[in-house]
Image (cartoon, rainbow, N blue to C red; front, top):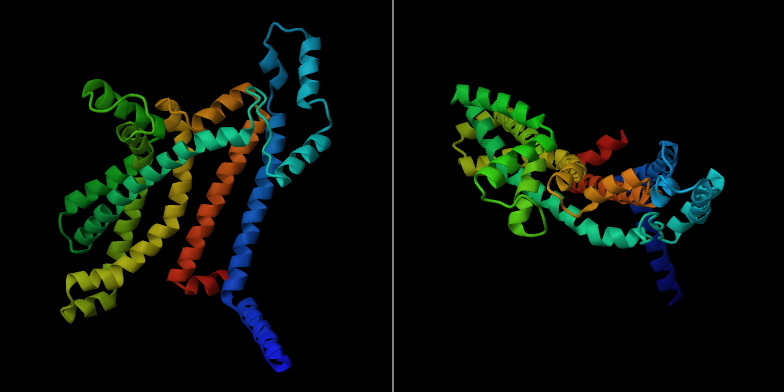
Length: 336
């Protein structure tokens, strides 16, 4: 029995040493350390910036006609008369217990507001990402093949110009044009966005146009680069079918590049929801943070930025881990 226990203990220690010495251990440690550093930076910087911006939350609450004594009482009630270091300590203490604070304007817990509004924002960003992937991957691959084979040169050149223009188009311009054409002129879709399928189409398209153009160009370039390699020419000389050629050589490269940029695109789409939700009057996080900034609602601003930052770093962490699983060379390349 003692021998068995000792053997099990030795085996556990050996497994622990192998895990600790594997590339994954250092890779995950660096990524998790980066997540912690980014979140700590967000907490400190957001706390300081919202208090450095001109404006008094108490004055926003009581109104411009209220007397100074009433403003002072509200500031005391909100804890704004305390020294900054004490306010920051209280904020950190709340975060340690999962408390994001209470809205100055509504008196509602920030976590409750987020639970009501965040799902719509995530649904909007996710639906926009689906549009980006559906458009960018097939179109970019087709144009890349045509470009490499020297077909339709005028069309591929026009594609490059169009992708550059669309990639630089701001969300509010895209949203305004979409509303004008499809909602006001053609009357195919509702003006106001919402959780319904048809109400989600225009907001999703407005924030998907620019990222789709960027990703399409990346997929086109990646496809053309892969098809120009010598080993592809050799594979074609062996009469390897086009399907096997694409699945074995083109798809892995396109998937890796798409994943690398896809995480950044999803983060950008989350940022784009701020514009889309205000253009289409959607009750999501993007619309709420604009109201919170106008009202100088410190707890809401801090809570929204922290949660969106957490979502962003988790997305990038998932992408990094997925890339490590698909291509183990990433682990050693990152370490070096």
